[in-house]
Length: 222
Ligand code: PCA
Figure 1: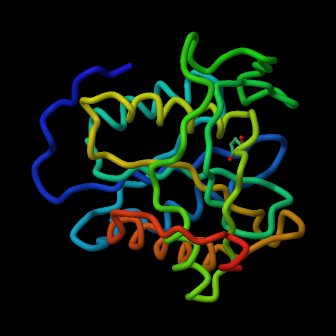
Figure 2: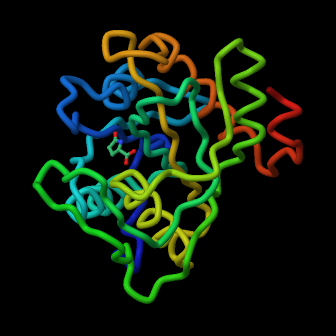
Figure 3: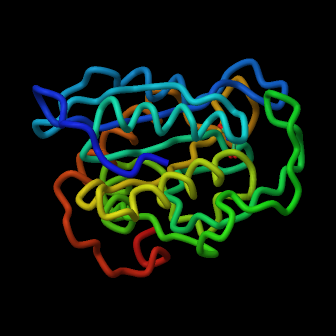
């Protein structure tokens, strides 16, 4: 784990936006396609840096830590595919469990191991997910708050990210994980790439502008 942040890079503050490579026999991963669509975009004085994480336990967090050290972002949003979900899912909680139903892209299939040995059971996102949900719905984009990111590589990255950002050296950097549905060519339910990219843009802008989250029942928003 990085314990100290290197100097902030010169230029605009950055948003690190990650997606994963395809896994589980799928030809594409919509998370990676959607974040690429936003690479280099300027949002409220911040520039989006899109990067790919491998769908691999361990290596994904290694790459994420390198990216954090390199870019020192003000905001970190990791995205991943969640087949079967119908909306952009704003994840509330990361848990300290790896429990893989299928092998990752390196063939690893950990069962009931911790992400961080001795780490706390869980971390909450530091993204303003209710405000982000309200912003998505106001734009007519399907969104939801999710209470579990599962126990595969997305949760692994989410937990590792929050464990790192919880350190004092990273105070002021917010982060979390967002799951996206399949693209139409992968099956149903789905959202189009345009909807995903627009939804992520709306969600990022909202996160930059919102310091204290809304306190509204997600059901009241939907
Ligand atoms: N989704 C998987 C890992 C990579 C991805 O895009 C998950 O939800 O864990």
